[in-house]
Length: 286
Image (cartoon, rainbow, N blue to C red):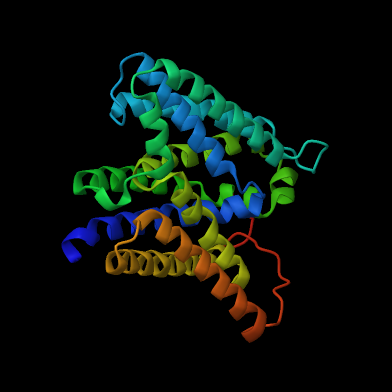
């Protein structure tokens, strides 16, 4: 069991670590489905690469995907508004998703292995992930994590206290572009392993669980990481024990963990959390 399930478990821990952080920002910004939109942009870019006879999942293919994600990040950053307008950003995200999906399907009809690329992006290959892939992704996540750490106060203020960022006259759309680009690049490494559905679970469920119990990013991250690890470990063990598909089972475990957390919050800790979420250490530094 250990020999078979250890690589998927390590991959899950990497995914929990990086997506748990992004998930807190996504929930705070109210752009829950941005993961799906950027993943579909990545699929569109990879499918376009096939027209140029690029091998799927090699470096050139990922560059095509990142180029497409940069376009998506620019659209999402440009359409951000300080106040809720007539067209909410979630609607823009939905448009990006459906247009990218339709374009990918059209291109897949003419591209070699186009349909296989779209299928791979949807379901991933968590159970068959290899150590070289894990090492490559760990290096990529480490570099992305360093970037996020250097600018974490900017990103956290913009996500959790947008009024403060506006008062400081920060170029919010510019910083949004870099945030969405970093997130999109993360998605290009994550989706081939876990697929869109599982990556969405890594992103949203731990963050929602954390919001139930904490109000500072540090505490929220601790809760998100711990609950994500529990869900992954339970999913992998049950998948092995009962010979069930790994990815869908881990998704279900994430849902179960969130449901149990909501019950605990409702019946064992009934006092509501009223304090606003704010960046660690205040907002005085850029």
